[in-house]
Length: 254
Image (cartoon, rainbow, N blue to C red; front, side, top):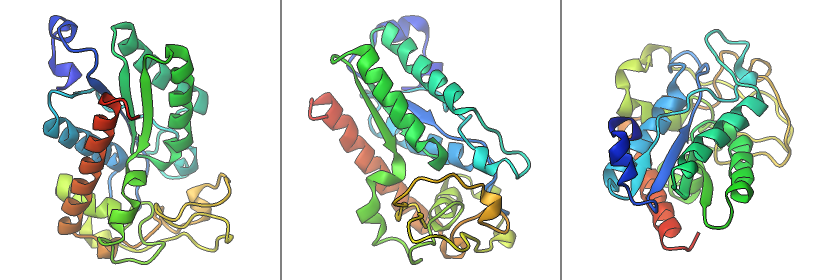
């Protein structure tokens, strides 16, 4: 069910044990070939597929498209929230639903710059709402590290920002927005051995770096290896894992 499709009386009639999914994305540059809304488009597509798979178990809120994207602000069109603003909005979204009696939440993140902030929102709300509520933060690619190894063709470094994974998924959900003529591998340039190189090879230290310092045109990875077939496989394994998270919340395992 989609919150904005329901009337207030319909929401009043819902089982309060339903899992409320709150998607968090971004509006930011995605190299030369993908649109600014890539993270939000992908996150919403994943959330919609989850809702379609579990229509009676999931209540989907609209995409929160303003993310923490300070590291992309050298590129035109990128928008950013201050960290405190993002955390405050996330907390208020969930608190509003909790005030109506809902107690199970997934904070579904689709942007790298939001990862630790979404974790903070989940932690704050756990202690604000108490033990009767469950607030689970999920960044979608963290669920499928093992499965991706049998899907990807690029080595470590190929599935970064606007790389093989994101381009493959966009070829499924919004193919008309992918500028295939501008696809070009990029970044991340020279990195310390402690820095992350890929969505599935995170760094061992935390350091903030503007993308302009690491890339030629805002990408990290190799989108040349992207395909629609890979995108479908990636979406399928992500939704399957998210459905397992929903089940574990509702059965009390999480």
